[in-house]
Amino acid sequence: MAEVLVYVDHVDGSVRKPTLELLTLARRIGEPVAVALGAGAEATAATLAEHGATRVLTADAAEFADYLVVPKVDALQAAYEAVSAAGPLAAVLVPSSAEGKEVAARLALRIGSGLITDAIDLEAGDEGPVATQSVFAAAFTTKSRVSKGTPVITVKPNSAPVEAAAAAGAVEALTVSFSEKATGTKVVSRTPRESTGRPELTEAAIVVSGGRGVNGAENFALIEGLADSLGAAVGASRAAVDAGWYPHTSQVGQTGKSVSPQLYVATGISGAIQHRAGMQTSKTIVAINKDPEAPIFDLVDYGVVGDLFEVVPQLTEEIKTRKG
Image 1 (cartoon, one colour):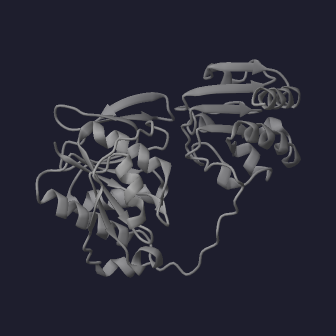
Image 2 (image 1 turned 30 degrees about the vertical axis):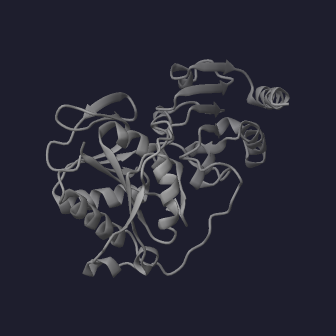
């Protein structure tokens, strides 16, 4: 069976959930070989092995932290060349974050291969992996495959279950020669993201979002209360963030972040196409809106016509009661 390179997204050795999802998908089309870079790379091996990685290629160098993107592309290219020397690869899989998509695009250009971004599913095909995408503001679902070179595919978070599958996970040092362009853009400072204690928006299994109907920054406490009762992330529509009611980092939509949780709860959101483009692939969608004609109701699995200021507190209290 052909091998599949999986680019590992981790923080100091702690593997993030989208990478574990990639390993599930990789096993459908071949044998996963993980590539972990930077500080703590070797510490990822146990987790990656538990989820199906037959090998873990690791490399650590100051360049990965001190410079943007290109050193990681150099390393992934080195991994591609080392692994493909033994036979053709089935694919290279990368998490579909902003950085992941840039790394994937640069790699595809270097190795002369086709690129598919923001896949939401992956299956084996007679002529190579077939990726499912949600396109044109989530109005259509397409299936595509790369016809040239080794497919380079980025996959959106929450596109596959995390499934344990014990494998060898043999750790191997990866030799990387950095290109001249690797040090072209230097990181001069970092500001840690303020922690809310809630899940990362793009990775959360449940997202509760508020829109124009929340009617003020002070009222987002209702949305946060419902989210906390569910163990969910908090999102917001563009109208809400443009009004200054919630941070832009929490915006869901075409000009914000795309999410695909198991459950998406839209409160006080009308359902403009720009917002729908960022959440339409959610598995189950619930809307709370006092306007029965709101476009969001054309999309939902469950709709509640009512004042969110009455519905949300009751819903939050009911969830807390059921959870004991």
